[in-house]
Image: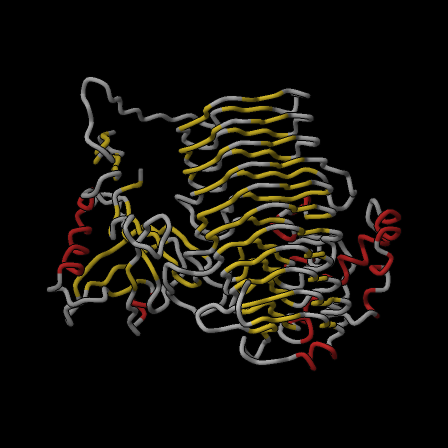
Length: 523
């Protein structure tokens, strides 16, 4: 079920796996229109005329990719009017200023309740208006409207060594299952679906096992799993295994992955994540906050049809902003499969690539080995970073095998020595630093587990004198690739373009390339 909207969902559209449709904004030059947008058509056209009807709605909203095609937002409609040129101007509050051709839709509109599976709630009269997905049988069907302040199932820190199994947890206003601070909890063979926010949330739950569950049709993330603390290297010991997550992010489209991860010494194994408008898996780095991402293993997972509605996005995504680039160490991605990671639903305000694995903003120290990439726009992407080893992977019918840049040497050099020299914990708050080299130095010399950090990763102690800002000690080696995607097949994409070669530049950046082989036809 979705709130009444325009444009309607079109399940017959082959380009969008969940049928969501968007229209595009036309933005004027004057200040008033800068904060709203014009319809694409003259007011005499039906699509513009319908917008004028929205001015009679009691609480109209829009859902919009206003500024970037990787960030959606909801905004309250504040004014709808017709100007002297015959265009409809729609102004809103609560989202960034709209760029030309931004994708958007109207939502929470009683006058647009015109398709099966839509509903509208009049808050003033407490009335539900429903267009059922299939005709109702008055003698058997029941319409239920529920609300509870928290998750359907809550497990607190007072609980230890408990199993939750063989249940159907459904139709909660917020999360399905919430585990906070518990130890040794097992969630197994549970079906979790049709919740307003997240499916399963397991936070700071050491030695938890989340295994063999099905999570689908949730408003935000499918599974959120964090345990262990980066600064102290306290281990989480979580196992997230054999789960099937699909059709998540039904309300908030971006940064709501199938599986969110964070912590120390956790394992994510043999999970299937599919039909994701943005990320299939997301976490670590500045997303994980105190949990970060250290010595985490991802193996045997399948991620399919990720990023279909967004751009500049990753099927598997982690980011090194906020000083976290060099302190997420010892992570492994091995023997995973990535299928059709690319945009299919259309573009809005920008043109950028989507990648199966995306190490953004100098994220470092990953081993990527034995993975298979099929029909992905870009297989692997390192946005600068250090000690990333991309080795013995297979790329089939991908547009670009690997994209590399050296952002720490130019536009992102303010986050590395000598442009910054603050030694402090990573983060954005007072007493913390966004200086990645400074955060690495702090972890290995001043942090609560400095001796253990220094013993595991001694190179962090002298990072300021070891090619700071360069993608140093990284390599692309022993990979095989075949075929092409939409007529494109490049081994190495570079800052100057996917079709440019920068193997010479890569060598000067301390990035090694060797032993990669290409065949024109995939076997």
